[in-house]
Image (cartoon, rainbow, N blue to C red; front, side, top):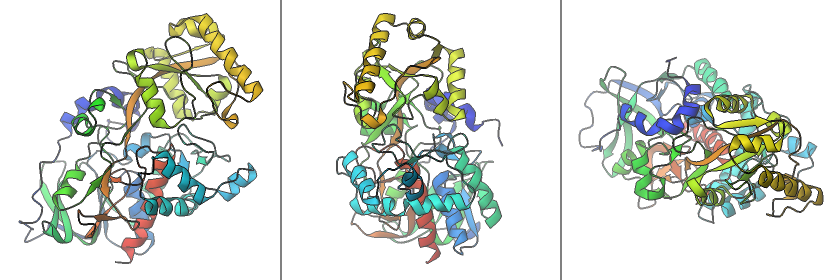
Length: 492
C-alpha cells in the first residue's frame, strides 16, 4: 500500500482536500461515443468503477452469483474509499438484536422515517427497496465474517435505534471483509486507474460498452464490458467548485471526505444522457473547523453527548436531523460549537475515534479534565456557564424531560469523570444528489428510460435520501444496493 495511508486522511482530509484535488486530475468533458475503439485493450464481463464499499460489494455479489471476469478500476492508490474512514454505522431493522433490546421496528417504519427525514423528496420505491432488503445485507456481510456489536443504537442524525456498529474500529472493517472476498472470487482490482470516458453505442442511445482510463504511468487504456458498467465512485464532497455550483455556502467548508470524492463520473454519465436529481442537497456533519488540524468525533451516539456554543449553553437537541444541526452550528459565532461527553460516553466510541480524540489533545482540538470547570477553562469558555448547562441537562435526565426536547431514550447524564470535549464545526459530509437510478440500480436518462448496460450504486446516485440523509443510512444504502446490483447484473 502507498504511504498515502487511509488513517492519515482522517485529520488531513478535513483541511487539505481542496489542495489535494490539484494532484488528482479531474476528467475533461467526455464525448462519449463518436470514437468507439476499433480494438479494446481489455474485455471483461463486468466493469466496476470505484473500489469503495459500494464497488467492492457489487463485485463480490456479482461474483458470488456466477459472474466471471470482473474488473474494478480505482483512481486512488488503495481500496476502501470513504467507507474505510467512515464511522461505519449501518441502519437496518434487525429482529435478533432489536428483539433482545425490546425495540419495536419494521422496514416500513425505517422507510417512513427515511422519507420524512428527507422532506419527502426521496423516491419511495428506492427507499422501500433499501429498507426491505437491508437486513439481508447485514446477514450477507456477517456470513462473510463481518462482526457487529451486540446492541443497536441511535446514531447521530439517525432518528431511531437501529444502527449497527462495527465490532472493531471504523468503516474499514467492511473493507477488511470485502477485499479478501474479491481476492477469493478472482476479482481484478487496478488502483491508480482514473476513468476519463464512458463509451455508449451512440451518445444518447444504445448500450454502454465500456470505459477509458488513465493508468499509473499516464497511459490511456480502454476496457470493454460485455454485461455492464457499474459506477460506484461516491459523491462530490471533496470538490469545492462542484459543491459551490449547487450551494455557494459549501465552497469554503472543510470536508470529512477523502480527496477522491470529486464527483468526476457524474458529468461523464451526464454526457451520455444520465439524469441527475437533488444536486443541491449537501449534508454537513460536526467536523474540523476551518483552520484547525484534527477532526474530533464525540457525537456518534445521540444518547451520549451534548453540544454547546462558545457561551457554554446548549443550542439544539442533539438527536435532531443533521440538516437542522448543521444550520444551528453555522449560526454560531465562528460557525463552531463543542461536543462534550463523559468517560462512559467516551468508552462507547470506537477505538479509532478514541485515537482521533487523543490526537486532538496534542493539536489543541480536544480537551479532557476530571472536572467540568477544569474542562471549561481548557476550552476557553465560562466555567460557571458550562457547569450550569451540565446541571440543567442532568436534571432533565432525571425528570425524563429535556428542556430542548431530546427524546427520553437518548437522555444520559454527563457525570462520570474524566470529561471530554472537542471542536464541532461543520464539514461537508455527504452529497445526497447524483444520477437517477431505479430499484435495479439502472441509471435513468432524462426521458425516464434506463440506459442499457449502465448501473450506479452508492453516493454517486441521487433520489434515495431526499434533502437530508439519516445517519446510518449511507452504509445501509451502499451495501444493500451493492448486493442487489450484483444479483441483477448476474442475470443479464
